[in-house]
Image (cartoon, rainbow, N blue to C red):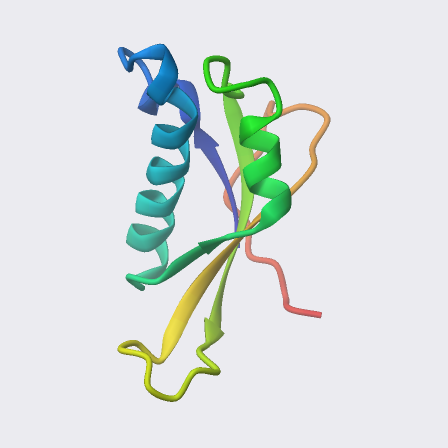
Length: 103
């Protein structure tokens, strides 16, 4: 599923040096709530996108593809985990949550 996350709303009134780490935490929280798994993994491209302009200036919005995957690790607490990946978009205007079929 593709979601648009409004990051500036979530890191508003946060100390400069905590903005990017807070944005990552908020993405994880959002993904956990949307997909119903405690284990959320952030893709490296998404992490780099959030941190691209430094710790202070996080992107206003970010388009994220959330997918529920089966856990390979047998002794894990949960059977499923959520993978959050970046979706590159030119503009956020008129975008809605949409289901994407796994290829």
